[in-house]
Image 1 (cartoon, helix red, strand yellow):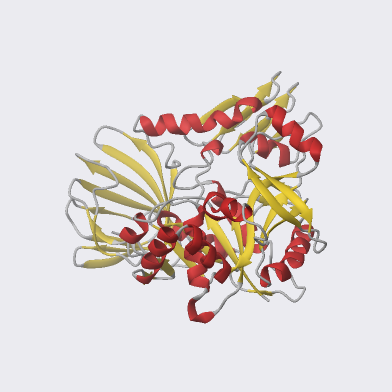
Image 2 (image 1 turned 60 degrees about the vertical axis):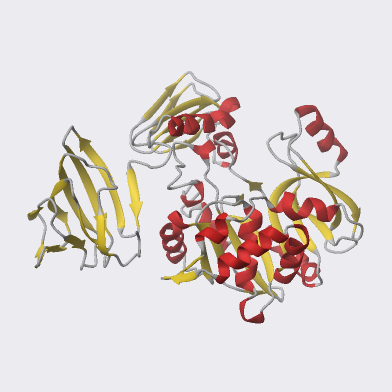
Length: 479
């Protein structure tokens, strides 16, 4: 049996602002341990065994995140079968359809394991055991979902009601998908023992998914087929046709397929209970629950001091956090923002991100340190006609050959070696050397060395926006 992991990396994680931003959402963050959530998702099925032939993962992500996905997978030794780029989000059903079409190329028909990129599973052995048990069912045509054994009457999750036991692999008929309940209803669900949290993890054959999406959502299937058929390879990525995908209806796997499927008799929809220390890290309160806590119940990361403080999440990125005599708070410090809320109001953090967006500010989109395919830059200072940035260029990486209409630039090498193109000149700069790029001059910055290149860039001019850039050559094929 061939198992094709499909990683759905489309979330924005607004409830984890200010650590999660639109350009760098929570799946790319190391919230527990050293690996990011994406990296943990990609590696948690490695070594599954049990007669299961594991294929390289397929990843579906927003095109703006493509280099983050590629770099983070490379860092943990994962070479994906494909990274499929969505020009815009259309929810999980179209994303899985794109992946199924890619998996079926060449006539193959593997079992798909569709998982979100931003969840945590603590018991990997237990998780893999459930996958091994489910794989033969999916191979025979079943549509399997994994329901989380509930630990509390949670009102923030949808639920799955299980039906009659199958008598194999601890599976049950999938009786019904249920919307997020109120507290009294959630308590009733928990007491009955018949309800599981809906984690959004599915296993089924690629051909089975395409048959179902064609049956229930033919317009979605047609749009995805057109998007793939008219798409093109872009470096190591699969870029689907933008207009065809914009015409695709947006819907989730649950609404598009699972709900109508579960309403049919003998539908083959099954649910397998999963008790493997799962969390969707959907809010800061959820992260507090899964992070290691001290004797006072504080989950701390970074430079933190706590005195007579209890049951807080205290996360410091750049500066020290000192908490005295406070309980049940969330305090998150980053380079450009500090969040303070109570654990009970953690779900409302998304309202801050929405307010930032509505007011035209950029803190919902970018961190102070902005990642680029060649490295990163960070703003240091800014005035009316100048700004100062620190650029970090990865070994062997190159910025585009470009020019600016409204600004000139001064570059000072702090460490490493820079190869500079300025007009018709090409020259090297080493530590403590500098150069000047006049307004309107074609230029390029490269790192020919084996260590990161650190540059201080001083920009001066009448307009300093990131959109004042004309690219002539770019190895990353950006517009």
